[in-house]
Length: 247
View 1 (spheres, rainbow, N blue to C red):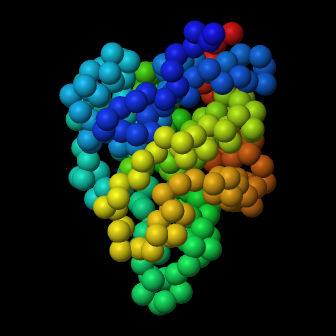
View 2: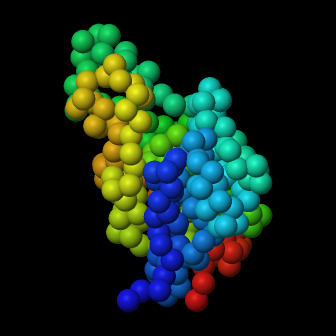
View 3: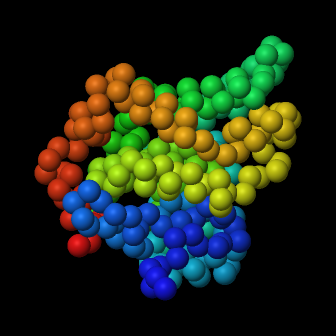
């Protein structure tokens, strides 16, 4: 029986709160447990949830939500310092524009999702670069989140795991765990058709693939993106691994 910590923490007010620890890397090490967490937003945690998060020692949150999004769910754990790395949401507005034109279908919604991931690379690399700057300051235990903890947070988590040397198939498995744990807010974008809500309320491999296609298109390859886009040279990657890997 494994004595590893539980990856997914069952919180009442955050359905997608989980640990990036315990993943193997290409050099035979593993990512450290209880250092980096990924989650949906922290504005609806119950009193019991807050005690769980406090017991984890989480002291920093890195929030990818846009300006208006943040006001709807302010972090309720007083001890956590929140660092805003805003990436303004675009998907729902794009979907509603298609709906108004009478052209909204599930395949259109899927492509809007993929385009939003491409734009993380094209237009929002600075936010991910800032995240890595904070990670290099060793602020763990920490949590990365957006609203649902699946798209902006999913890409950020994939970048972290890539930088730490975790294999692609393991990164994909972590990304897709959202489909097991995330519980969609039924009141969110309720004006959209059910099949469209299903498309935007889950994740699929093609979304993450679209982001990495944009990396290839804009930078040539992932290593160049890490180095030039995220400013992670050899020294920075070595320092990152020292902080977040164990033998």
